[in-house]
Image: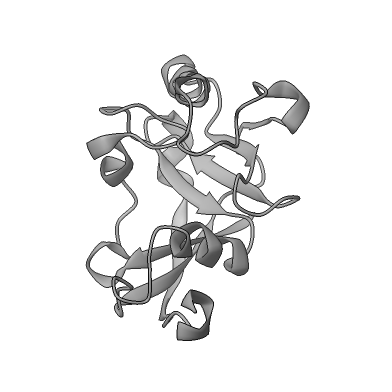
Length: 152
């Protein structure tokens, strides 16, 4: 499986989950490491773009292509598996509980979860603590400037 992550250049060569753990986000609480990726490039861009305005848009983003072995243990959740408010902003604690349990159980290396930003697309969350994590590799890193028209 190939997944994508839009990352600042300084962090583009690292897969750790430490960034998400610093403050906690939709699918993990503060202190819980998780790597957020997307099933396609456009979703990776949308997931980042919702956090910026034209004035605050960084110019040093890289599109990171990550390869996950097809035999990696995968848990798929659909909207029917999620709480009613799973895609609200700000995110509810119930979504963090789902991600925290995924990491704590350590049964699966990958969690496929619906995107709260783009209906019908999926985020692929990676458990950096899973024993098979070492099999996940960065295939490429490419400069990926965000088109300023997105922020008009």
